[in-house]
Amino acid sequence: MKSSFTCGILALVLLAVLSCSVKQKPVPNRNYTVILHEADSLLRIMPDSAFARYSALTRDSVQAGESLFTQALIGISTYYKGKAKYDTAMHLAARALQLSVKQGDTLLILHSLLLNGNLSTDCLRSKEALQFYKDGLSMAKASKIALEENGFLVGIGNIQLDQADYPAAFRSFTEAARMAGLAGATDKESTAFNNLSLILKFQGDFKEAIRYGRISLELDKKSGKKLDYANHLMNMGVFYENMKRNDSALWYYNKAGEICTKSGDSMIMIKVRFNRSNVFILQNRYQAAINDLKNVQRYCVRHAIAEGQVYALSSLAEVYSKTGNAASALEKADSAIALAKQHGIVNTLANLYETRYQVLDALGRQKEALSTALLAQHISDSINSAKKQSEISKLNMQFNTERKDNEIVTLSDRLQAEAGTRRMQSLIIVLLVLLLTGTAGVSVYIFNLLRARTDAYKALQAIYAGRQLALEHTEPAAITDKALNTAVETAEKPGAVPAADPLPLIPDIAFNKLKQLFDEDKIFLDAQLSLEKLALATGIGKKELTLLIKIRFETGFYPLLNMYRVEHAMKLLDDRANDKLKVEYIGLKSGFNSRPTFYSTFTQYTGLPPAVYRQAMIEKDLPPHPGLPGEEG
Image (spheres, rainbow, N blue to C red):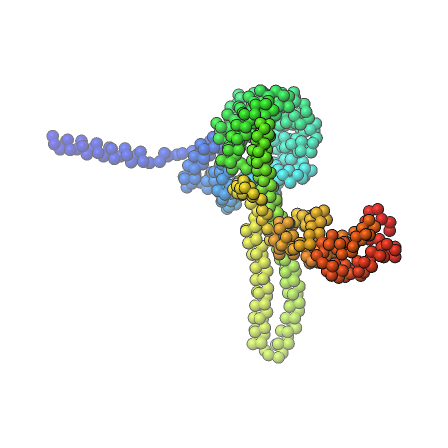
């Protein structure tokens, strides 16, 4: 009895252990291809669910296989791209490209190249993105994969569109449409035609834009993609709105809104209602505009789109101001400003403060209005300064890269020329050395020759390494929210003035500024003008300014200053209305701070003292100063 009871207990324990071990085993025979397909389908509408599936594939990488693992990496990178986590996305995309090249899978390589190009475009690295697109396009053409050609052509066209190279962008999108048509991808073809219509819109040809837009809509009907259809309907509304045909614009906006309501898509609905509110404002239908803007605000709150909330509140403030509801207008403007500061949306702050100024002015609160107007101007100046410095840094990097490339080419040419000369010299010297010193002398000479050649090529490599280092450390970042926030915080301090950040290399923009200061502002008339003052006025450093003057004017700072001052004095002396003015006074009006300096400098440049020059002009013994309007030669 006791032994049977013991056996029963042991059997139960063994069964429990076996059941636990069974529970801990992974689910066998998982279909990883199906999981990848599910993740790809969910990526746009439910990105977090897609991310979970991609992550499962990467965790089970051994069972899933290299190809599916690489595709999962591409999916995760795309997920982070949608979340604007570009550093992580670019790291994963680069890894996916390495793996796909290692596997030799053409389609995976193409997908990786396209993703890397799109990420580089998002990070404003246009040159890098263009290289990815061109490499991908060449491979797609070689592989005769028309659909993949379409993706790279669209990427190239978007870069050309950003650079306002409309003819090139038009050609790229036209070819993209043709490739999509060959591949039977109606949705891609529709997107290409929509892009063509946007180019025509930018060029102001709205009739042609509408014609291409209608082709895009017909293709959307064939593809059956409702959201693309709604988006393209909204674009048609924008075209008609630009043509002042508000009724037609409203029809397209309403049609797009119906599709969004049925599909439950809020993103396009936000744009539709915002655009429609603009038409209502133009038609003085303020209550309808307010209803649309409140809906936009509600959608943006639901989906945590802070920028959309700011724009909606700003527009509501303007509408309330138009209707005479100043209290509500001020409340909305203040809410928009607070939200913009909270989320770092600084690009809109200047306009928001301008709206607040108008409302305060309407309320008769002049002191607050003036303070707000000054703050708006300071913020605007700060943002413009940040943008200008970003543009200058991009031009700097390009200039620096080209300079390093030229140095490499020059040194390479010199090395090749020296190599030819050395070969001839070597042949002669070897023969002589063989005759005179024997084998030992030859060995020493060859050793020295090889060492010299090695040193020369080390110099070439050093320059190339310097170029690479320059590219790594001078890559211009986009104007980040952090940088603009700093500019805004600086501007909001009492008495703050945006400061320019001096840069080591000066492109054409600095030269144009310098020319404006001399030719239009006549900064040389300041007798106390120094290199430091001029550097501050141009926003660049003294060394860079000196180099710029030397390169562009082929002279130094003080000779340039004297040249402008002497030319100005000559014009004043040529003018008979100034005959009663003393010569010394003419010198002071031209920027010279003393009579001796004026006389010696003027004589040095013209060959005549100023008094003699004036008398010669009076007596017509010398021709008048060339280039002055209204004088006879």
